[in-house]
Structures are given as structure tokens and as C-alpha cells.
Image 1 (tube, rainbow, N blue to C red):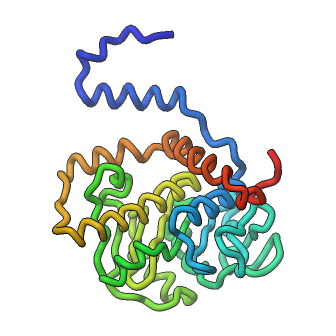
Image 2: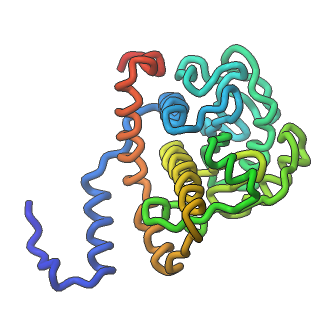
Length: 267
């Protein structure tokens, strides 16, 4: 049924609120299972510049305390499927599946302990993010498309070493603080999100923002955006329903690639 609201008389706040209600009413949640979302995210990230051989991890809470899903060490992001994921405890003991988890997943356990709101973690060595980290430069969010990360990215200027010890886990979880993302100099990116869909969207935005920043820095000085407008755009973009439809779009793109046909069982 068409609305009788005269939208031309509404101010911006009212129009934003109206749009939120419409999104909540009309946009569907993702129909994929948790394992499928994880496998799809790996394939999506592979296609979006996050490939770095066997480096990088993805995890998601299973719903049971102290447990999460992750990929098997020895497989690249383009090989992850719903059937080869591992279920592990926070000590990285395998509870279900074959093989072993990446020992670097230890810092994920520290983040989960520190952040009850986090349900999915993505860590990659995406090339433009890694290049920015080599310059020891924090990520600058200065474009509307990347404002999903505005004021939501922490920064570590010094490399803490390989993240397989508890010291690095404590350090990384403390550096992340209450942010959704972290740039580790000489290393890569970390995204800590409330859902797999959110983690996927943020990781794509992070690498794209890093690439745009490097391009802009090569041409001149990156200019900041108005903080109020940046935060407004962050809150506008970062909504569960919007993340769900964005994730579904990226999933559709990935599944058009015949190489990713083994990602999921036939639906």
C-alpha cells in the first residue's frame, strides 16, 4: 500500500527514520547458514583483494560458550567450503572437523573474551592495507563509501610480531578497544563484528579505503571530512538489514564464478 506521507515536508532526521523503517520492513535477512556465510565470506574476500596465500583467518562464534568455527590450516580463502570448516574451542583444540586451526587464531580467543558483542572476526593481509601499514600510516576514512568505518578503526604503529602468543593476543585485543576494526602496521587488518555479514562488508570497505588512500596520497594531501557528517554516514550504512543485502549481493557475484561452485552444498 502506498504511503500517504508528504515526504517533501519532512526534515532530514524524519526522512532517515522513515528509510530505516522501510529497510527493516522490506529488506530480508540472509538465508544462508552460519557455515555457508563463513565459506562465502572467504570466497568473497579472495575476489576482493584479500588473498595472501595461507595468511589470514576467519572465525565466528558457534553459539556455544568458548567455541568458534574457523578454516583449516593449509587451505587458502579460495578453498574454504562449509564442509571443511573446523569447530574449535578457545584453546584451538579441534572439536569437529579434520586438520588443525591456524595457531595465530589465539588472538581471536582474546578478542572474543574481551568483546562479548563480537561474533565474527576477519584478519587478512590485503595488499593495499599491508602497503599502508608498511608506511606506518593509519587508515583515513575520507570518502562517503568508506564511512561505514568512520571513527571505527584503531591503529597500531609498531609491529608486535607473529600473533601466536598470549602476549600478542592481549596486545591486539587491547589495541582494538571498542572499535570494529584495527590496522596493524607491517601486518594487516582486523575486523571484529557483530555478524558474519557485517564482518564481510567491513573487510571489503577497509581494503577499498586503503587503496583509495594510497591513490589520493600519491596525488596530494588527503582532506578530512566533517566529523558530524562522517558519523552520520557511518550510522546510516552500518545497519544489520543493509549488511545482509550487501552480503547477499557479494555472495551472488562470487557464486557466478565457477571456481566457487564447491563453496556450498547444493541448496
